[in-house]
Length: 188
Image (cartoon, rainbow, N blue to C red; front, side, top):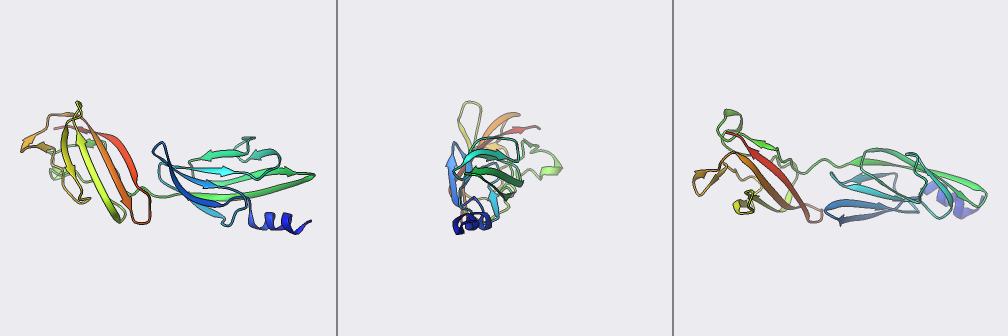
């Protein structure tokens, strides 16, 4: 066994190259040669696992391509033929917890909500901006405070029941800019 092949087997086939935004889906790119055994997939993101050069790849999920995309936590391995040698390596993927949650339903006039929509922030923010739009795209609420309370009112008047678009842009400490849109239904 050559020293380079031994190095390849001992240190793996993936390299964490950082985070990138792809169509608003955070992505971790992992490529040969690997320096870590664990990577973290951003919540609602994916990891792009790239096998080394060789002939005939077989991944643990049955794919037979040099690149796979994974969104779930777990162990992933790949078998690669390099000349007359079969090389196998694996990596463990963890899913990073969500930085905040957007509840799909808000009951502003019921005791369970205390009349305030809670954005349930679970990480430290460098920057935060939220906008609530009605079905015609008009701005009903905007805030840069992640602890702000939205009372489902516009200019002091209760907003009618219905579906509203919630657009959030944030930068968590040590993370890139993220954007997410979702729907919130007001039920009174």
